[in-house]
Length: 238
Image (tube, rainbow, N blue to C red):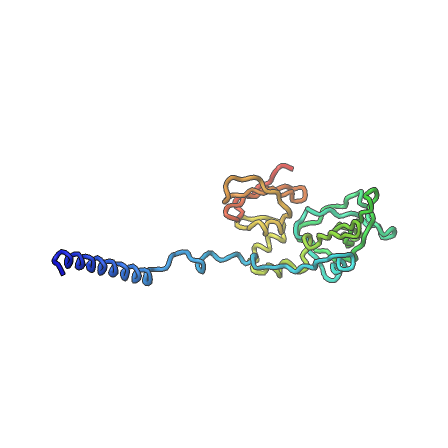
């Protein structure tokens, strides 16, 4: 082999050895490097309430909707659902006159579920859950029937399990505030809904900040959340 060719081979081998060494070093460092601070297994755990799956009845007709009579129910969003006087002697609700709004986590014992024809509605019927409140009989709409098709939304309206047992991971002071219909700093939006009912969010350009207006049964409250926790709580104009 000529001297010139020999030098070229030697240079090539030297480069190959260097590259192989670098590759071994990189593999070693990769295997022994400290794990990243944030991994899937180390991510912030979900809040306990995210694991709660309330039971549903999935009613599809009048008969299946009467499952509501088999256990107490609790209102999911207070001050959202209107109830009406029910005249037992006439077997009908006075849907022209409101009796009030169901409150946050209000507990009801549904006595029956009935269907009532609506005048001037083209044959549409209203499904009503019948219950007693303050010694009087009332009805709250839970769905409709038209042309043989039911649309029943009671699963969106009611818990059929005690919410305090469903969300038993929440601390006692949170449940005390809910029972007193108060929102306190540090509570999240679901807890506030349980305490003072439905809310209407304002538009926000900051994803970390959310402002929600709560009618609160005629005593409106504005709550500002930062990173999902109530930060500012103040009364608002009626």
